Image (cartoon, rainbow, N blue to C red; front, side, top):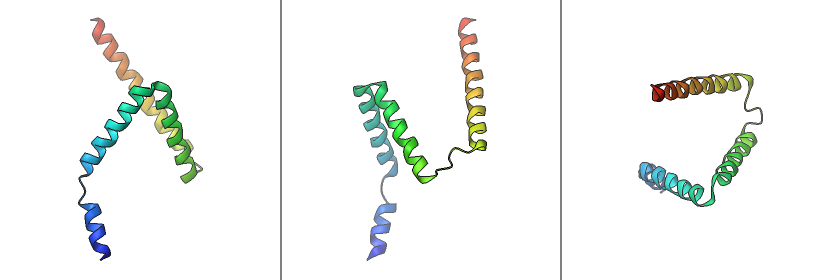
Length: 84
């Protein structure tokens, strides 16, 4: 019955799946280096553009910039606190 397959899918150990995925990518990037991380990020970007050709829009870019500015401020604070 089709509902059995749906129930089986929903009953999966999703945390275990996430942990396995994280371990896989960490090992791969650790083995192949930072260029592999950039390649992966570019593949994800390309996939996002295929699904949403107008991404990122102006609002998304502003929000992204806001997050980058905030992270820069936080990192500057950490650096200043280390020097004290």
